[in-house]
Each structure stands twice: as C-alpha cells, then as structure tokens.
Image (cartoon, rainbow, N blue to C red; front, side):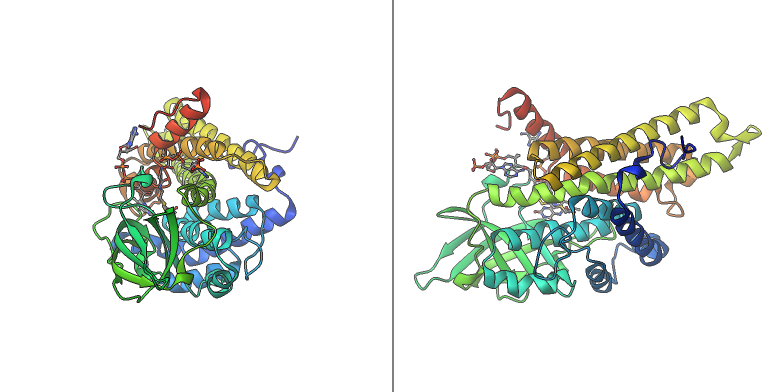
Length: 391
Ligand code: TGC
Ligand code: FAD
C-alpha cells in the first residue's frame, strides 16, 4: 500500500481522474498567487478592491458557470466544479461566494429559465467575468421563508413590468451589472433581469459585517422599476424556480466548506508540530492528538460525502434532499474543525496572521445562507417522516 499521507489519509486523491486533478491544481495555484497574499489585508479592511479583475481571471479559468453548457461556459463536470469551490474556499469563503452567486445562482437562472435572447445577451459576458451578476431572493422580513416575499411585479397594459420592494443580504449586489430579482406576480413568483442603472433601482452596500468581509453584500432597493416584457425569465413560475437554483449553489458549498476546514486543519497540524510547551511539541500531547484525529475524521468524511454527491450530480441522480444532507453536515463540521483549530493555535488562533479565525467567522455566514442549519434539518426531517414541520 502507498505510504500514509497526513493531508490525504484516506487516499481520496485516487478517486479523481487526471483532468479533475488538473482543474484542482490550476485553481489551487491561482488562489495561492492571487488571493492568499492579499486576503488578510482585504479582510481587515473589509473590502475586495480588485473584485472586477478577480472575476475576469476566474472567467478565464472557466470557473464562472462552470458546469453550464454553451454560451461561453466551460461545460465542466459537477466534480470539477466542486473541486474548484473547494480550492477557492480554502483561500476564502468570500471568493467562493463570488463564484457561487455568479455561476450557480445568477447564470444558472438565466441558463435554465431564460429565453434564447436573454441567454445570448447575458451568459457570454458573465462567463467571461465582464458582467457580474447577483441573485436576490431574501428580503428584510422574509429570509428562510421566501414564499412570503413582498417584492411585487405588476404587468402594465402595454406589457411592461413594474417592480417594487426591497431585497437584502445580496452578495455582489453593488457591483452587479445585472440582478436576478425574484418577485411575486399574479401568476406566482417570477424572476426578472434588472440591469444596473435602471431608474428606481439601487444597491447600497451593507457595511459593518464581521463575517465574509472580503465579499460585497448589499441591499437592493426597487422603487417603481420599469422593465420591458423581455426582462422576465419565461421558464420560471413558482417558488420552485429560485429553489432549483439554490440546489446548485448549495452543492458547491458542500465542497467549499471542506476547503475552509482543510485550510484550518493544515494550519493546526503545522502549528502542533512546531509549537513547544512544557518542553515538547504540543502535537505530542494526547489531547492535541485527539483534536487532530477528530478534525481529520470530519474533514475527510466530508470530502468523501462531497465526492459522492458530485458523482450523483454528474449521473443525474442527485436529489435536493441529498444536497441538504451535504450542506447541513459539511458546513456544521467545517465550523467545528475551524473552532478546534483555533484552540490549537492558542492566542495566535485569533490573529489574521493565520487563516483560522477568518475561516471560522466566514463560516458563520455560510451556516446561515443558502438555507440555515434548521432549514436543512427540516428538509431532511420532512423527507424522513413525510411530515412538513416548516409551519
Ligand atoms: P415548498 O412548498 O417546500 O416548495 C415550493 C416549491 O419548490 C419546490 N422545491 C424545490 N425545487 C428544487 N430544489 C429545491 N431545493 C426545492 N425545495 C422545494 C417544491 O417541490 C415546491 O414545488 P411545487 O411544484 O410543489 O410548487 O416551499 P416552502 O415555502 O415550504 O419552503 C421550503 C424551504 C423552507 C425549504 C425553502 O423555502 C428554503 O429553502 N428556505 C431557505 C431559503 C434560502 O435558502 N435562501 C437562500 C437565498 S440565496 C443565498 O443565500 C445566496 S448566499 C451566497 C452564496 O451562495 O455564496
Ligand atoms: P431568518 O429566516 O429570520 O431565521 C432566523 C433564525 O430562525 C434562524 O436560525 C432560522 O433557522 C430560524 N428559523 C426560521 N424559521 C424556522 C422554522 N420554521 N423552524 C425552526 N427555526 C426557524 N440571500 C439572497 O437571496 N442572495 C444572496 O446573495 C445572499 N447572500 C448572503 C450573504 C451573506 C453574507 C449572508 C449572511 C446572507 C446572504 N443571503 C442572501 C441571505 C440568506 O440566504 C438568509 O440570511 C438566510 O436564508 C436566512 O434568512 P434570515 O437571515 O432572514 O433568517
């Protein structure tokens, strides 16, 4: 048998083919060169000043709308996309969020529900990273329960639509060239493509966040926003349409969260080998070894789960409940791994000199967005019992 690798104790690398390894290595290199050297500074200042450059570079890597086919998208496999999320989130959850929202939410909505004209107009520049997209479902009074949304779109006699309402906590909102906005209509929930600069539409940035600080988060204000008939996504009617997009973004998080956990595990392992107290490395104490062993278990079980879901997605057999299983488990375990890593680093664990506290605070958002822990417990609870306990 090959030697034991502390960074790949189960030999999960063997599950990947050469092309998958090449995608992973390319994204890992890009993140090491473009994100790692700057991320602590961006995080401390609460900004992502080069978001447009980074988005274009991610477009050149094929990371935007990665599993989508045609319209300049890479047409990659779900596993390749998952590995990309893993490597990006090992750098920072904010960079993975940028890619999730662009590809799995905004582009996916256009690709799945858009007209041919909408796809040709928006997808190629979004795949290239020239146009940033956002996806606006959450409202100030309706987060976990988007079916109660108040943002409303009414059709005028001439065929135009007029949108009124508020969205909040919208990733990429202030930098987006196009917003996919979900609104209530007489026919149920529908999706609208709102170009930046449309009169009545604005996207003020939300400041004072202590999580996902290297990510743009915004409110969206829609005051009598008039849109032509061609702005509505023709293939999307009902809440199932935006929820269908969420399944894809949640899938990316199943992988991505393990990237944050891996980064923290590697920091903790390195630190435990080097740091000495009571005359010996702290990694030589049984209590530290128990922590490292438990962290390794959850990290690699989580990766195995991500891999399994990825193969199912590629086979077309993945169910939304299985994605809830993965999102619930992996984000919850990732944050536990990061918090344990924090303890191993002692006081240094709270410093931005190490990635640990940054990942742990980022994961507080990841635990909540794309469906909170409780929402995914209820999705699974309903699937297990057949009883809906949401309301
Ligand atoms: P419910 O009656 O269960 O469902 C309404 C319709 O939708 C269908 N459906 C789904 N379809 C596809 N994928 C899914 N995951 C689906 N879940 C449900 C369902 O079959 C039904 O279809 P139909 O044809 O019968 O009408 O709806 P509900 O009102 O009871 O709500 C269910 C619940 C709570 C699970 C859902 O509303 C939910 O997921 N809540 C959480 C909201 C959420 O996740 N928001 C995320 C906003 S986007 C974001 O956070 C981006 S973060 C940035 C980043 O990713 O980096
Ligand atoms: P609430 O729904 O008010 O929930 C509060 C608490 O109550 C939670 O613990 C919840 O689980 C619990 N709860 C609610 N209902 C029940 C129930 N029935 N049973 C048990 N417990 C319940 N949204 C977008 O649309 N687009 C984005 O791009 C986006 N980006 C985001 C970026 C960041 C950094 C953050 C933090 C959020 C983002 N969101 C986005 C919003 C996110 O999806 C919501 O925050 C999330 O869905 C939860 O909604 P809420 O915050 O209103 O919490």
